[in-house]
Image 1 (cartoon, rainbow, N blue to C red):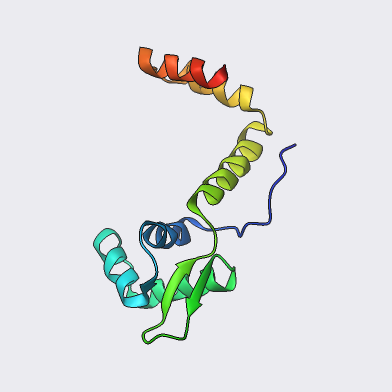
Image 2: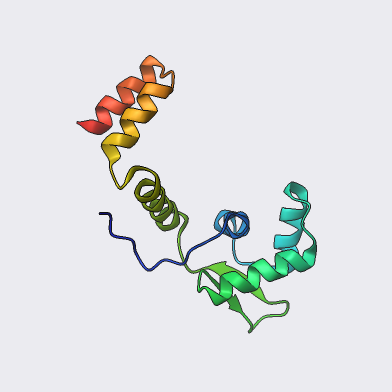
Length: 123
């Protein structure tokens, strides 16, 4: 069984907010809203709610010493990707990397370059 860390569980919508702040931070709520309005149909109120949830989950920190407040991540994208990968692997493949790779290789057309990359990784 894979050991799951104490990183906060981040929903798909919250992940979108985090991606904005991982790319550039700190940002104000207005800056996050303007970034997300381009890619989503979310209202500013929805984005504020997501920001607050992430602060409550301790995935984001809000700097209240500035006006307007600025948000920045407390967890790295790499940590969260690693955690999500572990959760997916445990949920779908009972933690078996071998089963994941076998299923992937069986069901996907891999280029020669991708096959070579897999060989290098396995070595």
